[in-house]
Length: 277
Image 1 (spheres, rainbow, N blue to C red):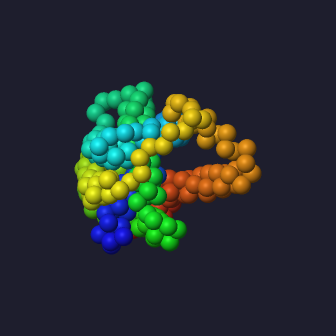
Image 2 (image 1 turned 90 degrees about the vertical axis):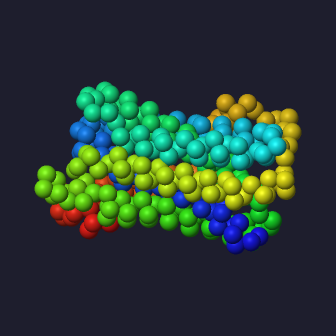
């Protein structure tokens, strides 16, 4: 497989890194400390969106497995998620002025769900596409390494550029992180970055469509709406329970750390955003 194809495939995962960093580092702080939404409501919105995401991921995966079109099984879903994703992210960081707690909660929940759903349309078929593009164990492992690399690049760009460029100190806000007017531009930046790399991946891998396997009939397959139940059933296997709950514990730790690091840096150490970046 050519290097350009590996890069074209892997760069799509910049979008996942962008979402991870913007949600884990900036979103909670913005709604809680800048807009004044109580932490319990901001946390509830994040949790509900995550639960919905856990249900829709296997659903979209099963739908794309069985989808038939002249553009293949994966690319139509990837394209459908890529185009509106940037808009949804930008809107998440630009709620209208004057919303009370209920309005802010609804805005955060609605657009967090939408962002996660649109990313699912791209992310899950994109993972399957990589397995179908690769031929053999070593090529598949190499392709995964590109995907993981670009996911970290997306998170790094979001965090470093976000802290150092979009939240400069001013007379009214010595700490730019507390300036609500800075967040809409940040939302546009991460939205454009994510959508651009998604589209790059879609169009750079389109030449593989004629060579990919088509859907296979599975008489035992359940309806896609029951995809989450199918996943839960696999937990009766001990090895899968280990593979499932270990990342859950790790990501819980990582999520708490990433969410609180901006609080600790801002209020305990008195860092400016550029220092955290």
